[in-house]
Amino acid sequence: MFDVIKYSYAEVLNTLWQLPNWLIASVLAIGGVVVALIADALIVHTLRTTFGVRHPNTRSLLTRSKGPLRLGLIVLALSLVVRTAPIGERVAVVFSSVLNVAFIALLGWIALTAVQIGSQVYLRRFKLDAEDNLLARKHVTQIGILKRAADTLIVILTVSVALMSFEEVRQYGVSLFASAGVAGLAIGLAARPLLSNLIAGVQIAMAQPIRLDDVVFLEGEYGTIEEIASTYVVIKLWDWRRMIVPLSYFIEKPFQNWTRETSALIGSVFLYVDYTVPVEKVREKLMEIARASPLWDGRVVVLQVSDAKDRTIELRALLSARSAPSAWDLRCEVREKLIAYLREEYPDALPRTRQEIVPRSAEHHTELAPHSLVSDHHAR
View 1 (cartoon, rainbow, N blue to C red):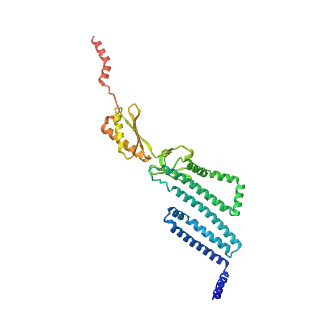
View 2: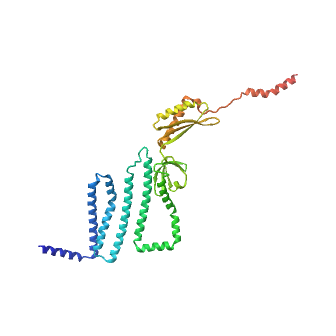
């Protein structure tokens, strides 16, 4: 019985090896890919069942690493197929080169995945939706910019190493840069804006003149930092328009950052009233309005006579709020209520234009005096 089985197995092998080499190689390659996919599914299922429910970080790691794991198993299976399949030397060299490039791409993919997972794990403890999110905005901005810079560097290195694995491309690149100095200079000049913005991105990540959700004022516009990309910044303006500014702008030009150290701001309200206004009463009313408003943070409320002009005096009210939007709304609320208070309680304290009316009879008497003298002279 064993002889029969042995004879049948040998007959099957002889039959298989009598097939064309390309067909055998194709069957082995397809079989290797199928085995790699089955092994990937088993590994992912085992790890997810073991760690996925109890460890959220591990679950995120598995989700992000599914692609690199699958590609790594396929590359491993195909490399074994190339060594055992009945293929020619030239075909084996081509497949080996393709697998080398795939392996280099796999390393780059793994590096990108590691950077992404590391940044997500690091930022998991910071919440941008918190009331005082200054520290969160600082770290989110820094990690985001550094992550994009690292991704760009990894992609450049991966493509460079992949091209250097081909002798023809490497020689062509060396001869191109050695013989075409003018072209290299032109390429360098053309890439200068991109490189300057990338360098500015690293400077912003380190020095952090701006962060995500910062309130800034530049070019006569007021808005918040919505996105910091690799080469530009998106600013959401107060009326929901978007201003696109290159990263280098925040390194080379001055601008106002209203939330550099803290999100709290002091807003100002100016009123122009008559000299007869009771300043102390207005100050008491301002305190009452501030205490009743949920927008006031309870820190600063001041009313001062900041200027005196020929017809009016200038009252400046200062109030603090937790954020720039709250400060704007608080200023509008205080301005509206103070104007209503003055109109109802002290209407005479609103700005007025004074005029002095000279009686016309006095002027007429002055003009008629010479005629009276003449009449008396004729009478005499």
